[in-house]
Length: 341
Image (tube, rainbow, N blue to C red):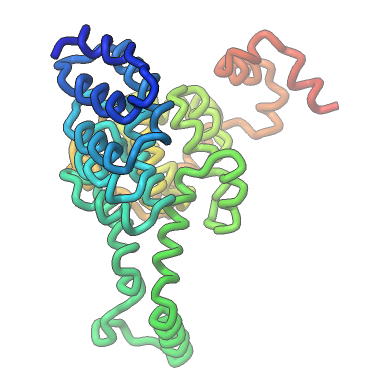
């Protein structure tokens, strides 16, 4: 079937034909070898308004068809992934249109059913696989072999016994904690404020770094990193100036981020450095092995090259350079002074 056939199907809008039109449009689209952006947009414009009026069987059929499609329209795929797992499963398992960040968000919203389907993906990000295992078998998160444990004082043993009893009495607690961690990775705006209830260390800093990294604007992220580490912008800029994530890894370790949060930020800044699972595994190993004290020593070295905050604020040269990194403010030299009145 040619692309012209697909465009002809999109024109047919006879009343009562929503079900057939929905299926036929997707079938025709999947037959295209390399659909154009226009054809992808046409399919979304046609199918999304029909989505709520078609049957479960049609949604299941379309999800299965698009799961094998290399150029599946992202908006339609995301809509189908929000459906119950018996519809969304083919996309969760196979679709290339679903990114790692999309998978994390889906697990956070839908929990174990979607997580089990996602666990069947080939070359699944190991961090996501670890989080799924935490949801699947939550009681293993805290359980330890008593014979392998080091000698402990009576007070510590008493507390460990209490922790173990709590875990066994409330087996869903660890799973819910893991689910909250997943949700917190993707919350923005008002949801980010609600995520503060979970109170992990450095929540505000992590959210700011994550969101600026995901914009794809290097200057925004470098500014947020300079603020988080209290270093000069030029130093923060140098940390991400080349294709070596080691300085950024040390910066994130000094902020005491968990490895999954550190990885999410790093992969947003350096998406091309993680083409396969082994690269991700190497990053996580390096992050685990980097002692926080060593990371803090590196940050102290960067701070030693940084003028004091008072000197930075008083320096028009530095102020202008920081404004230049955010071009919207570059033409407003009096903005910083007026904001202090």
